[in-house]
Length: 210
Image (cartoon, rainbow, N blue to C red):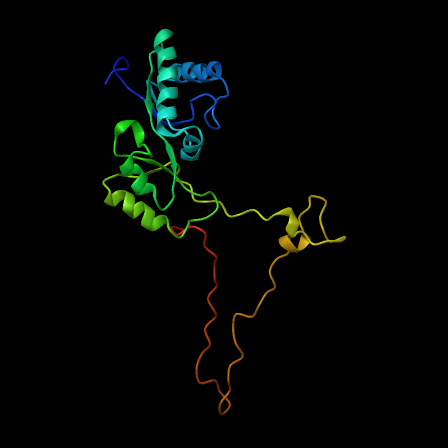
């Protein structure tokens, strides 16, 4: 495939102005589009946050904003296609909303862009993803990274002189107290009947695939 007929799509973009946490103005959105074109992008799927879409008037408002920006792209004769999608925050009813059309997959395909919680793997995620697949969709995670371990709040700092200048408690950085990994063997007749194995270390897990 030559450079002349090559296509490159940006399938995760907050490109719509004043719609979520993307550009604030139309000129900023057009500047972002121009920069994408300079980098070889030929198509962008607008994927505002699903929660923002609900707050801004739902799917009709989203499609209207896409048409408005597409009209400006055509008016300026920019070589780029703008399509519709959403960054869908995963909730238990995601499959139902995809079936009803209140959640949109990417550019009319059967591939929804899925956003997870940043701090944990919620207990309903497995069933929600299974239901999406059962409905005939192929969920696409917006990021392959795992949820972050929650950062301790400054309110957990101990009061008094023990608190560090940054607000974190010194006890937070203090290494855990060492515990003996072996138990005192039970001596019978001057010898130990069975060897005592070290206790396995327990690790707290926030992500099920580590």
